Amino acid sequence: MTHHIVVLGAGYAGLSAAKGAARRLRGTGVRITLVNAVGHFVERVRLHQLAAGRPLKELPLARLLAGTGIDLVVARVTAVDAAARTVRLDSAPYAIGYDTLVYALGSGADTAAVPGAAAHASAVATYQDAVRLRERTAGARGALAVAGAGLTGIEAATELAESHPGLTVHLVTDGEVGAGLSERGRRYVRRALDRRGIAVREHTRVSEVAAHGLVLADGGEIPADSVVWTAGFRVPALAREAGFAVDARGLLTVGPTLRSTSHPEVFAAGDAVAAYGPDGAPSRMSCQTGLPMGAYVGRGVAASLTGRALRPLRLRYVAQNISLGRDDGLTQFTRPDDSPVPAILTGRASARFKETVTRGTVLVLRR
Ligand SMILES: Cc1cc2nc3c(=O)[nH]c(=O)nc-3n(C[C@H](O)[C@H](O)[C@H](O)COP(=O)(O)OP(=O)(O)OC[C@H]3O[C@@H](n4cnc5c(N)ncnc54)[C@H](O)[C@@H]3O)c2cc1C
Image 1 (spheres, rainbow, N blue to C red):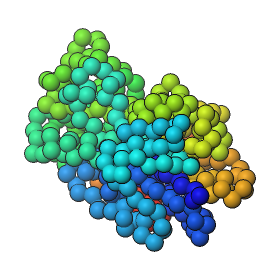
Image 2 (image 1 turned 90 degrees about the horizontal axis):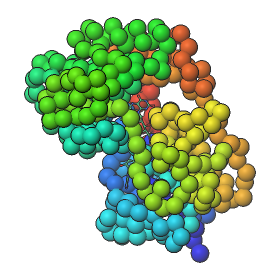
Image 3 (image 1 turned 135 degrees about the vertical axis):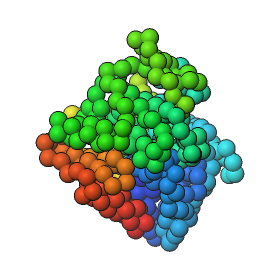
């Protein structure tokens, strides 16, 4: 019987896994189906741009998959029945059986982290989040508070401040802005935030999001007409509900070749995967993690069917690229384990570098 590979999620990880497997298994009769909630590829790294009112290029999945032989199913996965090896969907064909499953459903904003965030805050983690935020802030004046000052929070705050000069933007974090950056990197980001008039509140814990803004753990408040929640990401509950081995955050646990530790017929890649960084540390949720993982899983799935062995994946990082509006940015160079070194690239040069990398990523996925 024909072996059926089903890939869940057509983000950076799932798309590269599906295309990599298809290329290697061409002519073998193996079927590959890619399931995604929407019919286009979402460039998540540009969602803060979309939220700020800058339309993204249309990238229909059908076009990205042309000539690959991969079947595309546009539907939302509602469950995985691991015993029956079947994926359940919210629309036709409603169920798909698999022999090998690639789980690459990415992540979303963790709006369950504090009371009120789900009801009152927007996010920039998914396409729908970014569109909603764009609608809420179109022509807005008054105050906007961004909760969370990791890379996504910094990018969202600077982009929104630049595109909405009438808004007073607050950036609030319980730690330090850009905590994972070098000293020089943090200083550059602080100056960029100051230049845009963004009010930074560090070491300030948010305990609730209310209709009128942020309620703080120390009893204070930051009044805001809109709140953007970027303080943490969470993964869908589908892996846990399927009975796949997951960690405390619901991320799928995998061995050194990205196969599920509980279900060897399941591979996983991208934000949905736990503990694959150096020394077993959680890997950073990023394209720089998801893309090589996806490409590796594409090779791994093909190798598992052709009886070849694969060396464990070694992730090696080079830099983190942070946009600070359209013409400014920070490239933080890193050691292979993703820890920062003092070297940075800043300003227009960094913004151009990031744009080149982002376009290059899409070119790789088109290939
Ligand atoms: C605003 C923003 C800026 C970022 N900037 C950078 C950056 O500069 N550099 C960097 O390296 N990383 C960046 N990241 C992180 C990066 O985008 C993610 O780590 C990356 O997208 C993860 O890839 P993935 O394939 O695992 O998941 P995703 O890209 O999220 O893809 C998951 C796919 O699964 C689909 N899906 C989810 N649930 C279901 C379901 N139930 N049924 C069907 N389909 C489903 C989604 O529609 C999506 O297509 C940024 C993230 C954000 C939000």
